[in-house]
Length: 316
Image 1: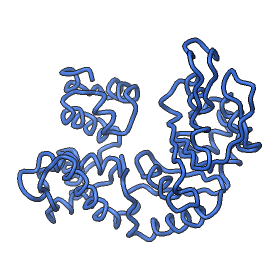
Image 2: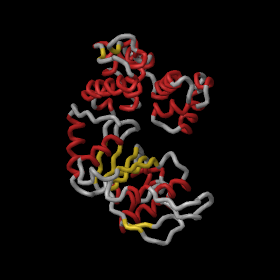
Image 3: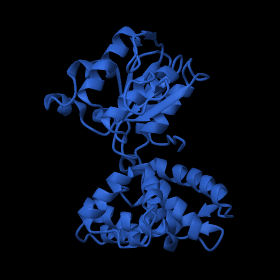
Image 4: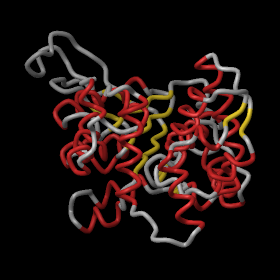
């Protein structure tokens, strides 16, 4: 998990709000762009709460089909559906006394939304196929990069659930709006990845840091982490030089400094995916992990941008 760095005034205010909310048991809605650090903030809230020594359970609502997601959330009894050979507790049950984090809450199907609303209101539920009512005491934190108010207007998200989740709303700003945090984040990430890969890389050159500070990072902190990990792996010396950074990032900064046409987000993302596939040696599962997206989402982006020649070397 990436540590939170709050050198910027905007992130200091985010942490102040998070720590005030952590002292209560109120439900919290954390919003922000993909990769901005919502997961890290949820863990920080848990660690500052009275539940810190209890379970921290997270489920990604975007990666599981709706029929499996309900079983993961609520658990199931033996014979509840085809393949349910044994009874199994769900994530909600596992989070008892602790914190339950629902990532990408907007992807939760309407039926599951209704069941979750009941859990929030009554603090009880039944496993799939079960009749025994189970009581639950857990703090709920919902994460999303989707405008839930707009989803409510489209009728894809329940209004009553939205208001139940949105007791405390904390917005994590994108990295481009808190550039003061970037040097500290970069240093922390460099230390982490140097240890992970057994590399004696202990710093960034001024030129490399200048490139990073002038890049907009559409993928936010997650993209910065991938960039630093790649640089640590390929660095020839004891520090990361500007040439160790992805060419797409250096080109974007050069274009920006010369006032030429700004590259579109799609162009930057396409190059970024291509470079990540190259670093992962064509292994799409590994590339998806580095990018912080599902394998299905990666395939969709490859098809959309016409990238992925690197991926033909391995299916992952």
